[in-house]
Image (cartoon, rainbow, N blue to C red; front, side, top):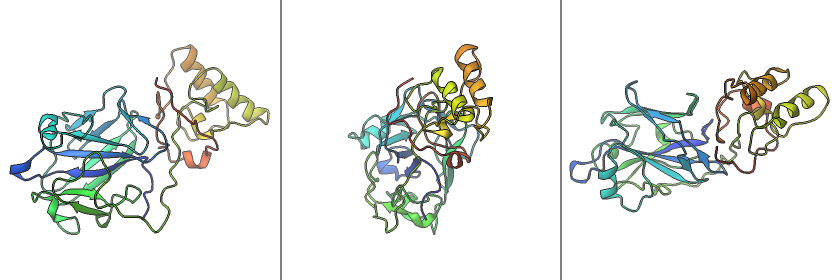
Length: 271
């Protein structure tokens, strides 16, 4: 039942508020990682390809923090004035009859997604009756309807869900964020990184974070390809490393766990 992936998760959703207390549609994100993450360039969208919102540059979410995205910021603030820095306007609203929401990183890779309904097994109180859809624990797999509950009186945007449940199993082991290309895990990308990888591949040296070394995103780091890729980026205006870049972010490639990251960066520097 634990979440398979997604260091940033869709945690609470208002999709059909009652007319007499309508803050507009909103979605809350939660950062499961131990560091703040820069979501600049990420996107969120619903089932329509035309409904797409791109996060502004340097949009940060704290470790264990929340970020609320609103269809109408003014309407949202009028009902939830204590929520800090809601982001919007999204430019679209969610369907009142059920919807799919997808969160993508700056490279277009899916970080999280939810497809919810307005009838059982999904909580029906969220469909125009004043409640929100609230995840019972951000470490749960949020694609399953039974992991959501109705949060009454407009929910708890920007704070822990009032339907929160402690888990019997440990779902809190989340892959640490990385900076793609940062082989030496110092929080920056310099010539040291491709050299460090070459030494690790051909001189029995080590790198603290193999998954970060996969600069071109092909799932392999044992040849010269990633070192050449980084050198071209640094000195020949070549393509930049794949996401997460230029800030730290979730390990989203399917091969990241196989490559491993024994010592990820302890902090992320703003680009």
